Structure formats: C-alpha cells, structure tokens
Image (cartoon, rainbow over all chains, first blue to last red; front, side):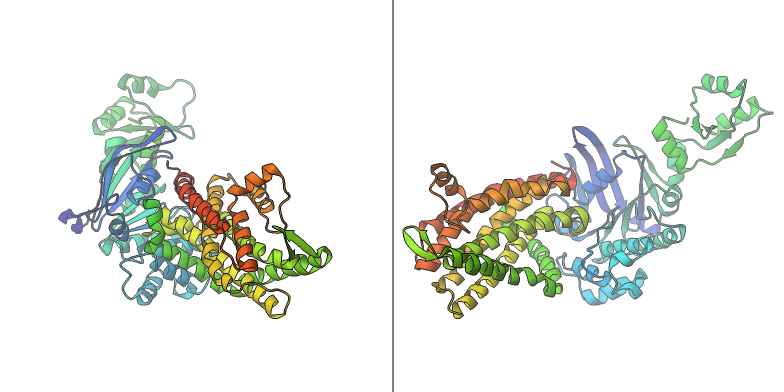
Length: 309
Length: 269
C-alpha cells in the first residue's frame, strides 16, 4: 500500500451496493472503497458481478440499494459534480470513429463542465504522456490494439479525474502492449489518482493492485492485500500432484481432512496451510509432488469450482 | 418534467454540437441529398407528372399540381429526414459505433444523449426544409410557382417541432428493434401509412374511414396547413392540429424512449 493511502482519503466510497438484473441478484451488498494513490483490483470469475458493481460506481446503472460517493460527492444527488471527478475506460473501445485521435480528445473535452483548463495544452500533454503524439491526426481504427487502449485510457483521464475506473484495460493485448498499459496505470497511481481496475490476468492484478477485492456470486468473498486475500480464500501453499493410476494413497487422506482438490489437466491442486503441509509431508514421504505459492488462478478456480481447501 | 428539462442542459447541446461538427466536416457529401432530393421530386412529380395531370381539385379550388405538391414536399422532407436520422443514424451510433457509450462515460447522461439525437434529427430536418424552401423560391423566380412567400419563414419553426416529434417516434424504434434486419418494420408500420394518408403528394379520396383516420396524422395536418398558408395566405386549424398532435407525441413518446433506451443500453429497468 502506498504512503498516500495512509491519509485514508477515500475518493471512491461505495456502500451496500445491491443490484438485480433480470430478476437475479447480481450484486448483493458490496462495499467498494479506494483511496487517493491506491489501485484496487476487482476480481472474480465471469458472472461474479464485477462489471455490474463498476457500472454502478460510474453511474451507468442505478443501484437498487446503497450509495456511491466520488471524491465526497454523492453520485445520485450530485451527478454532475461526481461525474466530473471520475474517469471511465470501458471494456470495449468506444471512441468516436468520426474523429481523429486528437479530435476524440477535443470532443471528449467538450463533455465536461467546468471546462478543462487550457484544453489544447492538456490534449498535447496527454498525447505525449500516452505516446500518441505521432498518431494524433490518424483515425482510431488505424491504431493497433495497444494504442487503441492507450487512447481509451487517455480519454478517461483527460479531465484530470480523481477516480479512474479501468474495466479490463489489457484484455486482448500482446505482452509488450500490456506492460505499457501497466506503466500507465502505475503513473496514474503516482499522480495521486484512485484507480479501480478489473482484470482476468492474475499476474496483472497482483502486480498493480495495492488491494484486491474478490467477488463471487455478487458478494465480497475476500478483501485486502493480494497475498493476504490468497491466503484467506485459497491457503498458504498449493501441493501439485501428478495424475495417479491405480491405488491413490492421497485420496483417503484428503477425505479424512475434508479437503477438496481442484483438478487441472489431470493434476490435483491441493491448498494447505502450514500445519497441513507439514502433515502432508509427514504422511507421504516417498511421494513425488510440487509445492508452490498460491496464485490468483488458484483463487479463481477455488471460487468457480468450490473451495480448494 | 425532468425528461423535458434535460433538452436545455449543456450536455444535450454538447451532443448536438458533436453531430453538427461531424456533419459539417462531411458537408460536400451531406449537401447532396437535401439539395437534389427536392429538385428531383419537384421536377419528376411537379413538372413531369403535373404537366400530364393539369389542375387538381383541392377543396373546391383548381390548383396546379406543382403548387399542390410544394407544401407537401416541405412537410414530407422534414418528416422523413427526422425519422431516418433518429432511426438509422442513431441506431448505428448506439449499436455499432458505440459512440453513445463513449459519451456516457463523461458527464453526459442517457437523457442528454437522447435529447441530443432528437434535437439533431429535428435540426437536420429543418435544414433540409430550408433547402426545399430555396428550391421553391428558385421555382418562384423562374415563374413556375406562385406562393405566399412570407409563410415559408413562418413554417420553419412548425417544421422543427414536427421533426422533433417524429424523431421521438424514430427513437422508439431505435430502442425497440432487435437488430438491423428489422429496420424494414418501421417502413411498413410508420412511413407508408403516415406518408400515404397525409395528402402530401395527392388529395385524399373521400373515403369515410380515411377521413377520420387522417385527423390523428400530424403530417396530414402539416401538409394541409402549409398548403393553406402558402397557396391562400391563411392560417387554418390544420396548423394548430399539427402542433397539438406533435406536442402530444413528444409528451408521450420521449419518456417511453428514455425508459426503453435505458433498458437497451444499460440492461437496466
């Protein structure tokens, strides 16, 4: 967690968010907070309610219950003031195809009041910051995937928001472009912005996020620093056992402990705490297996298929 | 009332400004339909067909077909332009270009986007109507047409209101149509019935049922109202009926548009 968070100035303060869509509760009493200079990673399997929760936070959806405050402004009661302080980069590219890269930024600038101070200067600054200067007079559809994403993020922060919502900002990008986006996200945090991002890339969430919030079936399953969240939901260690033919010595031990193993390509992934690992090592001295730290993949498997541990 | 107040919000003007800016950048292609469509219609129907037809009986008065047609074309152009803009163009911006979603990530809210689309459709329709007026004036200068010209300027605000109401109807289909494949439905459900039962291109036959049906068609009242104004220099109840029906359409349709489009765009009720 960065030093700025110590001031505990919450720029996003969403409480008790609840939303039903199509007669199904998609988000159920979720609290989302993000402080100045903090990156909050929102994780969960498909259908967990991440995008719906995010959409309530930036005003696309009206919560059935709960409230959202952006930099102190209630999104329902002071929509203009709250929206002036937030920036949104949606999953899909939503730039205006009728304008150039610069034109997109100019047009976006016209959608804000109070007006962005020195808009032409700010546009040049953003073009430079996001490495878009040489493409400024091209239309967005001629850009590569990585630069389209850069334009999307550039557009979302043009008006110097205090909270930025990035919904899967690196989906579909090659590794090089993804790293470039990571650096941009890090620069937003360094600039004091509160950044909320959703991602399917576990490495990305671990690297970028100061704090993770894991949603499952519309509810918060775990929240906190990445390692602590993994420990809470998955366990401290993952024992990876190759597939076994014939008599399985571990099966009975797992049943006795009430432990469920996840199956990945025939291998069993068993989440254990430190005493559990010690007990496993003692029980199977001659067995070949691998012990590794849990990853966010384990977390998603645990949430999708039931508990690992 | 909030649904109507947002028409005057700066965000609605910002969306309208975006459409104007895009259109002005493409002015050389954008100018072709409004200039050539009324010219072609007047030449083909007014001069070509009109020469074959001679004079029409309009409310017991003999009228040349070109003179009969001119006010009809003015009303019909506004109706068609507004409806098409708010249907096809808005649908493309909403569904394919996703430019609505881009706008909605800013301080612009859905009601502003909807008003921006409706105001743009009405503005464009009025601009097209201005081109029709120019073509009519040119016909007048050439001696082919004699109208009460002062009424042309007075007609434009009424044309704007009618276009706005048909834009609201177009947006209803934008919200309702499942896909582009269903775009032919509004032609059968709206354009053909309203267009044919409107006395824009020909006087309606004296059929009792039709006589009652056209009373709720704002295009019919607009065409007849403009005809009385431009040919006889008289303001008749048709204009008041057209304005009343258009206002009613706006009052009823816009809140429905907003509700349906919220469901369509956000999946929300």
